Image (cartoon, rainbow, N blue to C red):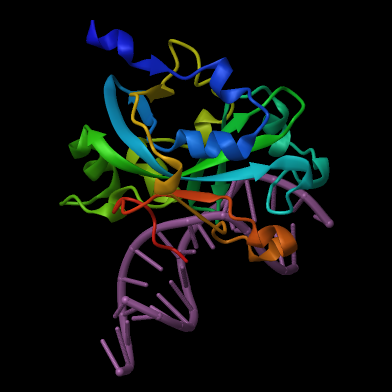
Length: 207
DNA sequence: CACGGGATCGTCT
DNA sequence: GACGATCCCGTGT
């Protein structure tokens, strides 16, 4: 049966220690939300890695532990959703083992299914890359908000999950560049931890 | 197309 | 009290 080939990502994927590798591996995977029985689906085309304690761009730099960041210290496979600039809901997946505050920011998807629903959520009347290119607008198109912070996206009954459709992205087809909006992060600002699929028009433009 | 500023509020100091 | 892992719209070219 064809459906058997579509696998929801779980512990073996998210609880590895190398968040940079996980960020790259998420390219080509398929992000799904299912709210009100409507499944909006998109292929991940852009991610960023945030490596907790030693990464000045991470909310968990130097093991900073607050009400907001505590979820990053949980086991890999949980959602970390926070509000940015008072407006935008940014969706991350916590990775590694409990106690290791690593996370991947999902920055853009290529819309695949229920595009009408995504257009409606964004008040767009026609399909263009701006619909889902950028972490804030992607979340809006998928209906993700801070209400979903802490959700276990590996559970078979969760409303957010990631599937493996066996789309292979070769290393040479991955653009590695500095992360967006982290100029304050000193030497970490130059780390090439933003990952995009070469020649994909659905990734975000910013910088 | 590039740039500049305003929106808007939770989080941390 | 300041600012941010952003976005949108207006202006000018």
